[in-house]
Length: 313
Image 1 (cartoon, rainbow, N blue to C red):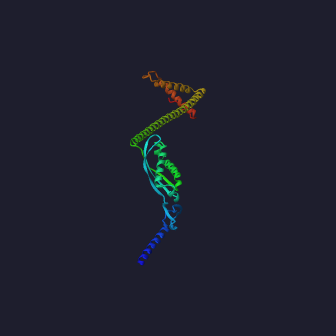
Image 2: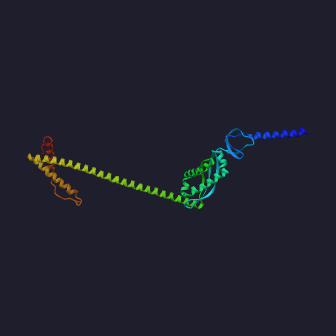
Image 3: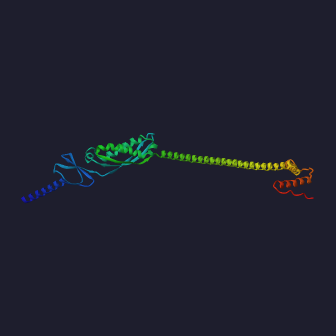
């Protein structure tokens, strides 16, 4: 009887020793911190590794995940500054930096972070117009991160990122935005078409202007050439007149005949070139004209140093 009682006592003592050993030796895994309470009061934090506690006096209060964590922000309706209602959801990333404060400064850290983020989403996005809301997600994310991170600092938590995943306006508003976008594109197309027509008109005008300039340049060049030709003709006529005058002064009768015949022939040319003359009838003394031409040939030969030829019988 005594042996059976001693066996039971030994078993109880062994069980008590095992319990004490289990409650005394603690192994903290990597990525976690344990808070230690002494008679219900937080005293210290255990880092990853092997630790020994004071039996009966100390116990593990909370096991805190020190890794970066992600939480989904549930979708909610937000009214913008211009009274447009949109549905918004997002995601937040946070990391516990102080295990003691995260365990004892707030109850249910994850739920508190979600509610705080949702409240600030309504505050930040409600202060913006719909167009700003749709085009400035980076600005929204930055504002939310600044506000939420400052609020959670007292909990020993660092909010690293907050991202808005989706902004969904009502269906009628989406249709209206689609019509507006289509109108803007049509407007841009019309502007581009008008610019093209304007540029074409400018190029056409420039081409016409260049053509006029080139035509004027051509006329000027032609007038210059014509004046030069008339100048040379006048010089030649002056030279001929000088030769005739010299011949007359030397008593050459044939020079006088040349002068008269030359003017006579020019007068005939003028009469023949007149547009109102169809038929010309006049007496002509062929022998006088031929004689004058022969005198011209003889006079020309004398002028250039040749010997005058005797007239044929």
